[in-house]
Amino acid sequence: MWKILLVEDEPFVRHKLLKLVDWEAYGFTVAGEASDGEEALELMQRLRPDLVIADILMPRMDGLELLRQTRRAGLDSRFVMLTCMGEFEYARKALELGASGYVLKLSLSIPELSEMLLKIGEELSASRRQRHALLRQEFDRYYPLVWEAVKAGQEAAPPAPPASYRRLLMVSCIGTGRPLLAAVLEACPQDAWPEEVWTGSFTADGCTTCFFWSDGSLRPPGKLAAALPVQAVACGPVPPGLIRAEWSRLYRQLNDCWYEIKGGAPADGSGAEPAPPSSAGPDAAGEPKLPPVWVMEKEIVLAFAQRRSADMQQTACAMWETLRAGRTPFSLVIEKAERLMRTFAEIGNQPPSGPAQRLREAATHRELLACFLAAADEMQMHMAAAEGITTNHPEINRVLEYIHSRYAENITLRAAARYVAMEEHYLSGLFRLKTGETLISYLQHVRVKKARRLLRETDLTVNEIGRSVGFPNDNYFIKTFKKWSGQTPGAYRRDEREAGNSVPSFRESSENPKR
Image (cartoon, rainbow, N blue to C red; front, side, top):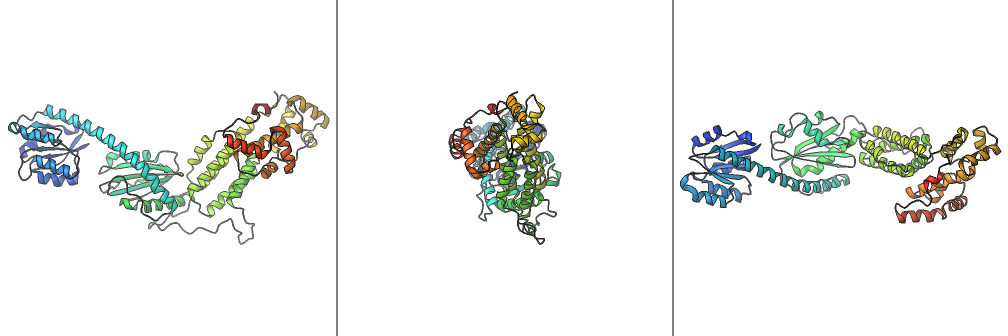
């Protein structure tokens, strides 16, 4: 509803306007009344009406002077002037000062006033849309600046907000699965607030925060965070100058929620309880020290590429526990999980969008680990299906599956023959008949293919990659790689990175066995 202030020194005229006009039908509500310009000016400072309907001739301060004083004070309320027949010159002067129109008091044509209200309502709506679009752009630039200060722990005062509101309320949650602002407005619609509220939201690093700005008391209807479908923390209302400090406090509270620490951050914002000793160090029982997180990340990638699911899961669980022991900020934990998932997608030549989205929906450290392991298993199943490792012979299919799942091990013709209970010479001939190449040649083909992916998609050294795909020494790896690719592993990595998303030097389809 647009707010109206009626300014008229004759009570009869004010009463007539209140009685004859259905203000709400045109989107207006009468917020106040005044009998002269001085009283009206004081009310305008407090009520901030959208439209002022004022008599031109009044005692103490007339309508024209009220209009002048309003513009000098920086108030942008629209004006409609009430005038008598002999006061047309005053009405013309009011139009020059920016009034939207005038109405004759004697006739007081309700249809004429109603038409003017419709026109002014449309103008106010258009003006608000334009103002809000510009203001939203400014706030969209403002929130990231404050967020960077929050993450960096900067104590300096944040930049001033783009609008001069008196109070601020914030609500934060972990994750981006469902728009938090929509959930808040569903729980507490804007028309339920006692004053006009400017809303906004910002999402980054696995955290979504909603902002509510107002010049009023900013007391939400009911307990805001408790009414939401997601676990959230709230603060305020506070002066806008405290936005960085309060946002930092919410971030610490969310970190406690992330690690499912009971009690959360103290109300005074002093932070969470002290972290327990890191599991990365030896404990009282003399357990071996766990490797650094970056080493475990590398081991996870290698285990995924080699389809060692059990090893990958064990190392991931150890890394998650190390992160928990150090109370690593949840945004960094999510970032690590997403980086690993992108690497998995590149190794498996799969789009990461689905698994990555599920990671973003995790609300706790424990849930993220479960989502991560489930997504990794799903991607490994897709990798196996994409290999196309089938022929029309079941025993050869078993050998192919054996090679693709254990290519990093010391696979020989004798070991494969024992695996399917066949005579070596017979298996060798049958394998060549069904796949078009010898078993050792096929094994080298698979190993080089895996090595090429790791060279393209990881920062592992050539030595580490060679050993991870089954080559016992560097010379054998480089010689075999050059045989299949026409260049050394180092040259291949350099060319691929310079070319960006270039086509591989041999077609993936040529690596599949014949049907």
